[in-house]
Image (cartoon, rainbow, N blue to C red; front, side):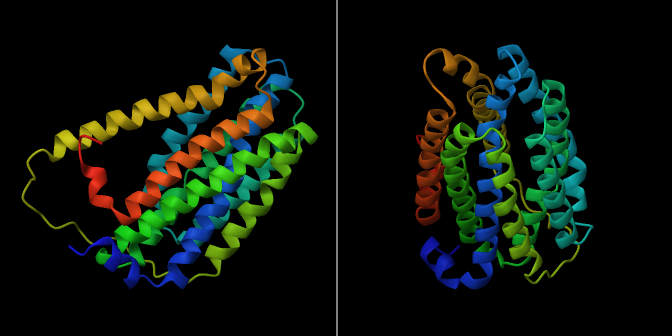
Length: 275
C-alpha cells in the first residue's frame, strides 16, 4: 500500500478537482439551508418540540430514500441522477423561500431530503469508478475536505443573510448548487456496473471496528441533529441569533475540516483507537 504522498502525487488534479469543486459547491448550498431552516421555523412560531419533529422528519426521509438511491447510483447514468437531484434541490430551496406557514416548511423539508438522497451516492460512486484503488484514498480525502470547507463557508454567511432577508439564504443557495452540478455534468463519466467483490479472508476485529463506526455515526449525527435542529430555540433565549449560530456551526465545520486535512496526509494515524 502506497503512502499518502504518493497517492496525492498520482492524482490527476484536473479531474479530481472537479469532484472537489462540486462537493464544495453542493455543501456550500446545503450549509446555507441548514442554518436558515430552524430560524425560519421559529419565525412561523415553532417551539423546540416542533423543531425536533422537523429535524426528525428530514432525517427519516433522507435515511429511507438513501437506500434505493444508492442502488440507482450503480444502475443509472450518474449525470442524470446528479442533474435531477440538483434540480429538485433548487426547486425546494426556492419554494422554501416562499413559504408562510410551518406545515409548508415541513413538507418542503421532507421533499428536499428525498431529492438530495441520490446526490452523494452518485458523486462518490462516480469518484470510485474514475480513480484507481491506489488513488482512491487520497481522492476521497480531498473530496471530504472540500465538502466540509464548503459547508463551513455556507453556514458562516447564511446566518448573516437571514438577518438581512428571511428568503435570501434559500434563494442564494441555488447559485452554488447549479454551479456544482454544471461542473460535474461537463465532466467525463466512465459508467459501468461494479464488478463482483472478490472473496477475501475475514480480518480479525473487522466487524467490531465496523460496529464501532456505526455507533459513532449514530452518536455524532444525533448530536448534530440536536445542535443544528433543536438548539436554535434555546439559543434565542440566551442571545444567539442566526448570524452567531452560523458562526458557531462554522467553528464546528472548521474543526472537522482540519481533521480531514490531517487525515489526507497522515491517514493511518486516524485508525489509532486511542485517537
